[in-house]
Amino acid sequence: MTRALFVSVVVLSACSGQIAPLDDAGPVSGADAGVQVDAGAGDAGATDAGVAALDAGPVACPSTAALCESFEDGLDLTRWSINGDAATFVIDGTTPTPSGQKSLHVMYGLPRGHAGQQSIELKGRVAAPDDRMYLRTYMRFGDLSLPGPHPFFIDVSDSTGRELGFGSIINDFAFMAYAPQGLDDSRTWYEGDGFWHPGVENGDATPNTENTLTAQTWVCVELMYFGDHQAPGDTQHPGEEVKVWLNGTEIPQMSVTDAIWASDLGHAPPEHWSPVYSEATWRFGVESFGPENVNLDLWFDGIVFSTQRVGCL
Image (cartoon, one colour):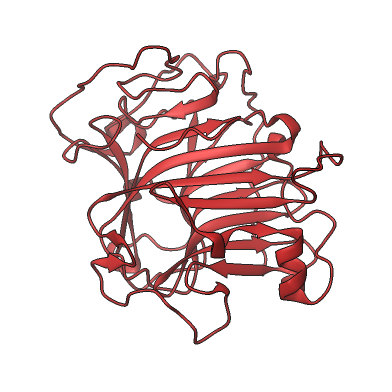
């Protein structure tokens, strides 16, 4: 299994949380970007007191945030690049979000002519003190049957080939790790029953529900990544670790530590199975494998990268 890695040279400013632009162009939406725009009710709301707005729009950006994205001004091509077909991505102003009026709608699938890798990629790097990163975003699914094989919806990788993805495996949300050592050191943990093996899925097979979640409603997804590359003396979190929360509830079956990995493998995991987060590339959309033969609709909004857990609005 070979994955293409996209290397960026744009630098993220630690002070402002903004990505240094390649030129003087500003946020782009509409025909100039090749990105469709669904007209909506327009901008609304106000920034909460005590937070620093690091991007445009009404979304509240916590003071601990390194970067926030609300899509209120469209898809900013000084911040994001498109891997795939621009027509896959629509700025949707018809469906209010938890943090504003606009969101990024990903329209995927062979019936639409958009298969393979279809994602937006952050051009810059996000500072991760002590190799720890908290990511919060809102996601909305048109269909929660979550067809396979196993697409990544949120993907992070570095130049070594270490890659982690939050996505799905046939009716279940899943967290997947792909190490440069190859498939023998790649692992998947899914929400139903911990470590996944073929033929065992605990998710709902219906298109409208997935355990406690409902299609066409916003889901708050939180991820905590700890790489232990810069803090090997951390006694509270020895080794590397990932945690997953859905709507504020931790999903222990998708939480990963060195000990959990070792219990699955029967031997110690790779010395480092997490990317170096301050050097990592982040992508949102559909990465990795399929599903290519179906229509998959998902929306993203309220993306926050932070040094601390920010929770759900």
